[in-house]
Each structure stands twice: as structure tokens, then as C-alpha cells.
Image 1 (cartoon, helix red, strand yellow):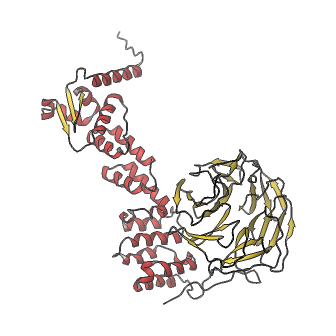
Image 2 (cartoon, helix red, strand yellow; image 1 turned 60 degrees about the horizontal axis):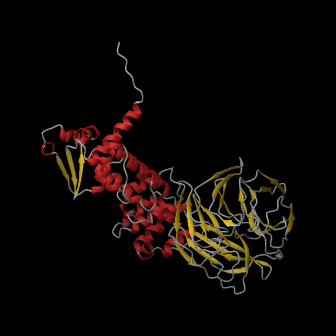
Image 3 (cartoon, helix red, strand yellow; image 1 turned 90 degrees about the vertical axis):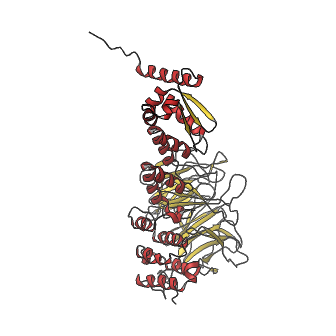
Length: 553
């Protein structure tokens, strides 16, 4: 009886591969030469035939290469040829900087499926906004199914950012229309319109496509203020009579009242510490005026937040006050004190119908978390944050609270995490690209903008955007001014940034759909901003006031 003994098959295979690799390097018993450019590589026919279907077909027949014992590769990267030969001998390969496509080309030529798949995985995993179109083209040219599939998903998740990249016009019209119709698309109607207009702008001769795009967009769900903004500022529409008529025609078809829009004006309520009063800044008319009769005598270490029809003020000494902003004759009323000491400027956010306070002041980090139930006028202490933080930025989106940056042990950090109020669970996410504290943060549909802040040395003008769907950070255009502690509010296509310690240059706005910063016209000379909230303009009965928003031809 014959016994088969296998002491260590894997070890034997590894040793054989290593010895064959050494023999190639030392030219021991080599019988075949591969030439690429001026470089010559000595190899073994048997090894090449075993490791590559390309060489197996070449060497098993009476070919010129088989007879001469040499093959010459033209118009290929020599180093990539060497790396593919190394893979045949060792099962490993290197990717030279900037040569991943060249390596893919050689691997496909040599029919090295493992190398092709490995490179395909790297391309799919390395997909970004900036390299989307080049990666998609490589996937299409070389038939990389995994790459093409990942690109389709990535486009769906990041279409708004990708629409700003060179090459956006290469997307086929029907493909873009299909994408905008998909239920999985996270785009709001304003963003769908912005993407459509950007694609049409690439083609001076394809304005007739506007009608097809408008058919898939729910115009009636778009703010009339934003529609007016498009009519007045979009160069193709405002300067082309036919396009203007087409656009306004779709607005009328969608039953938007173009003479008396339904949108109430948005007001930024500013705490003027110089005059000890509230002032309102109308984001549409840019008019500044006194907002309420109540006097504001709070110290300068408070945080303001809007909840229901009340403006809440949270102070350093744990005291809480609120004002019914609808009733012009109301006065500040005292509420239940906070449980924990959060120090100066308590970091607060509204989420799931409650007010939350997380962390501490710029000088005292804490892990304390508590929430306020306005119906009971009562604070509840929640499970602590896993690590202490100070002066972080908070923003609420889809029932979760995102905590951005801040100070830990006096050092500015780039941490980014998500808190679930329902389960008190904290999840760490990919950090911000730079350490920041006290930045403005605002949620815009499925994106979170982090604006300005303090780097640990200086106030900064940086703007970063986090796509919640794709879990990726991208950079947005910087502000016109560096701003430390600031608050940010989204109104239609605009993000308004209020400098919490500002004077006449206190407010700046950003068109997040078209990526443009603009200065506002704050004409009040002696304004000293210290805190802000955003409200809808109300009449004396607490009803939102309508304003004229659109014009017709």
C-alpha cells in the first residue's frame, strides 16, 4: 500500500516560488528573454507558461518567439512588465506611483486575472470626487465590471459634487435623467434642478433638453425664492428669452403662484450686545431692524437656540431662559436650570423634539450630555460621551447628532462622531481633514458643512462638506473672511454664516448649489453680534407671512 505524505504543502510551495524567483534574478537556467524598451528580463519558459495563459499559448506552439527564445513588448511601461513577471514568480507585485493604469494594461495583455482583479479592487476602493471620471473611463475601457458598478453607485451618492468636476458633460443625457428619477437618489428638488442646469450649461447647442429635465423635477416643491434666484442670475436662462419662457412656463404648470409666493421670509435674529436688544436681518431684503420689545441683559457667555416658537438662552451659570418671539410684548421667562456645568457658551442643538447640550466650554472639557423636555420644563442627564470634549460643533440630521472637532486637553482636534439620542450610542466617523474648534455647522439635506472656526492658532476660512450617504469629505470654496466662532443656517440654496462676535461684516452667505460666496449688505453701523437664531417671519397671530417672490414676463 502506497502512502502519500505531505509534511507542509504550503511551505513547500512558498519555498519553490522563492527559489524560482532567485533563479530568475541570478539568470540560473533561464531560457527565455522578455524585452521592454531598453530593459531585458531573463525568465523560464516553464514558469511563464504555468503562470500566464498568454505565455502558455505563445510557447506551446512553433511561434517566432518560441523559436528565438525572446519576445519584445513595444509601447508598454517597462517597470510594469517587470512587476507582472515578478507576480508570476512570487505571487506579489508592486504598483509604481502613477502607473496603476499602465500596470493594468500589461496585466490584461499577459492575461493575469489575479493582478487585473487586484487592480480593479484598488481602483474601486480609491474612488473620489476628483478622480471619478478618469476611474470610470478606465473601468469602461478595460471592462472592469466591479469598477463600473462602483462608479454607478458613487455617482448616485455624489452627483451634486461630481457635477462641478471637469468631464460632467460626458454623462449621457438619458443616464442623468434616469438617475434623477431614482427613488434612491438623496437629492432634493433644488439640487436636481442645479445638477440639470450645470449639465445643460456644458452644451451651448442643447438648451432644448431643459424641457426634459424640468419634466422629472417637482417644481412645486422648490422654494419660490430659489426659483426667482435662478430666473434672475442664471446666465443662460436670464439672457435667453425662449429658455426664460420655458422655465416660467413649467413654474406656472406646477401651480406655483408667481405673483404672490408662499414662502415666509427667513429672519436671522441677532443678539446686539451693544444695544441690549434683538435685531432681525431679513435674508431676502437684507434689511436690518429691531425685532422684539424684550430687553436682552444676558452676560456674553450664553448660547441661543430656537425651539418651537421660543428662543432659548443657555447661560454659563446653568440658567436657562426663553422668549416667545411671536408675541412682541412677551418677556424672558426663567426655565429649569441645566443639571451639569457646561461652562461658557454651552454647545447645544435641537434634535428629536428636544434640546441637547454636549461637552464643555473652551477651557473645560467634559463628557456630560443632557437634554431638555420643554413640555415638562425639565432637564434629563444622559449617558456620558466616551471621551470629554470642549467647544465642539453640533448639528442634527435624520434623528442623529453629529459632533465635530473641539478641544481636548487644550488641544484642537479633528474628531467627528455621531450620537443617537434614542440609544445614547456614539459612533466614530472619518475625522475632519484638519483640527478645528468652534466652527459653524449646518445640515443641508444629506450633507454637513463645517465652516470656519479656530485652528488652535488662528481663525480660519476653510469650508469642508461631509456627504452622509457616501461618508466622504470634500473641500468647498473658502469664505471671503476668516471667522472663528460662528453659526450657520441653511435657507433654500443659501447658507448664511453669522460671526458670533461680529460687527458690520458679521454676515456672509454661500450658494451651496453653485459653490459661490457673497457678502451681505449689513448697513447698521453699530451692530455688535453675540449669538443668533433663525426664524420665519410671523404676523401678530403667529402665522407665517407671505412675500412676493417671482416675477413673470
